Length: 112
Length: 142
Image 1 (cartoon, chains in turn green, purple):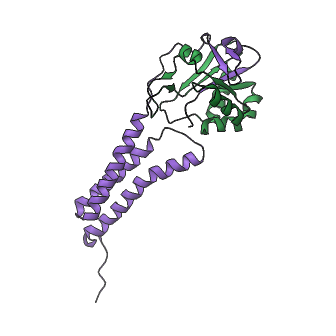
Image 2 (tube, chains in turn orange, green):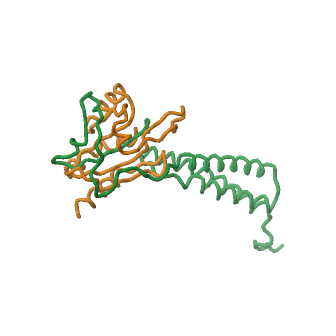
């Protein structure tokens, strides 16, 4: 889990900007608990019931090698009032933002 | 006997073609090697360079065949073309459609209810408070 590992390592940089990292996938509770144990500085959501993924329409159907659904890799910045400030949808299932790119977006939002 | 000066006119087509083959194969291999290095460095960009470098490699090998037909060059071209085709398929097959959902910049985040890893409830109300939230939707083990 390269993406989450990178975010975990840079968590202090996010905390300095008063930003919390919330990571979500449609994996079940057991996998989510393991993910939480692996990345203790991230808030891990188990969206197995898809309450969040369906609300934001981020399910990528039939996209796993086995034909199952997954979340489309996406990063969203939500400010303290719950307003969306930035959205990045990866152009590819295999491409991810680096923490530096997310921090850059955070700083751009804070500068406004 | 006077030395014959080396000019473009007396370099054999096969020796100059060999350089094209070697460069072509190296270009084709550079893509996967570079991608492996990026993954090792924990960087996950969109790897357009993979099929592009393989395509350039195939063009160079094809150019070497134009100069002199050799079985080895034909085999190299077939292998590099297969690699090129696979890499274009890989890049296009993993593309995602543009986002068309309800999340919009400047608008409130949609209402939702989901679950934390510890089993407790997490809703859109939990996004409001003293901090900015960076929501990351991830998949698989990538």
